[in-house]
Amino acid sequence: MGKKNKLAKFSENMTSKNVIEQGKPIFETIQGNWTDFFGNNNQIVVELACGWGEYTISLAEKFADKNFIGIDIKGDRIWKGSQYALKNGLTNVAFLRIHIIEILDLFGENELDEIWLTFPDPRPKDRDEKHRLSNKSFLEKYRHILKPDGWFRFKTDNTELFEYTLQVLTDFKIKDHEFTFDLYNSPLMDEHHGIKTKYERIWTEKGEKIKYMKFRFA
Image 1 (tube, helix red, strand yellow):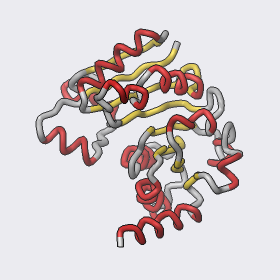
Image 2 (tube, one colour; image 1 turned 90 degrees about the horizontal axis):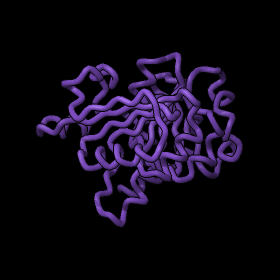
Image 3 (tube, helix red, strand yellow; image 1 turned 45 degrees about the horizontal axis):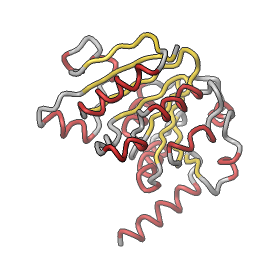
């Protein structure tokens, strides 16, 4: 039953206008053309490793004057966010099914206004550093596609990953850098717009403090 459900979701993704994935003609032409896709010149915000798109959807509902793109490789996950957006008339939402290592193939230089990285897999083993979405290689990619004054925002429950990211950033020229190891007891609290993912609620109920940072590449 599970496999059949997944196949049905994959099939719906292929016909959903707000899902961009390999196999669709738009997948080959979308790079540098996201304003045409949305039909406006509004700011474009990306959520990396979006899962079913809780942040993507919630931000889109709060900011109708911006466009939001959730990125994930799991088609059955983005199906949920895609269907919610379609059923609720959220025309400022899209979902992109790729491995994030491919991100430069789908976005042009300086095309994005903002990137959110929310609760990624911390990949704690040393041999998995290359897969951490805040490592130096990934940050170089984000710098390329962000506009000069574009924000990068990072939210996690994992202290080790947060400290690792702070260390990685010492290799970059950045500006307007602010961070906290306890978001909900911080002046930065309002910057998460009251949005909590399912897993964030689980961790905060267990007493885990949420870490948050923002910065612009200089």
